[in-house]
Image 1 (cartoon, rainbow, N blue to C red):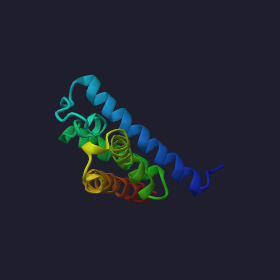
Image 2: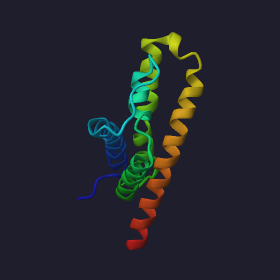
Image 3: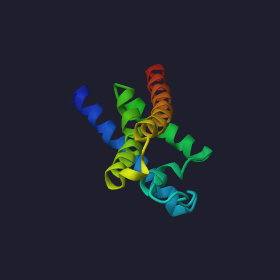
Image 4: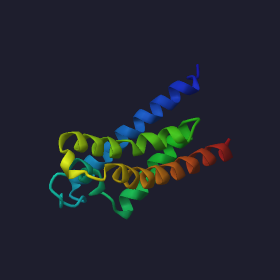
Length: 132
């Protein structure tokens, strides 16, 4: 029996969040990620320190895979991008004096991550549609 679309979207959202955290942890374990350069930004730099062309390609591939599974391309894209603003918001709560421009930081972190993941999800959805 097929799952209802709402459940599939929730699972893809959660899978996207898990994949982003797992990808960042893998980058740090393999030594690909750069060291934290700014004190007080350890949570956001845990993710942004992993940005490189191979990691972005894997990120798009994860988005394409989840986009092919999901019925909505936005659910996996939101899931893939959500750990970044959550990390930024956690830093705002922990150290409010370090994040004076946090709304702009959220936009600068979340929009590119969401856009890249969304394009990957759309590509995966269109590939699955063409194969059917």
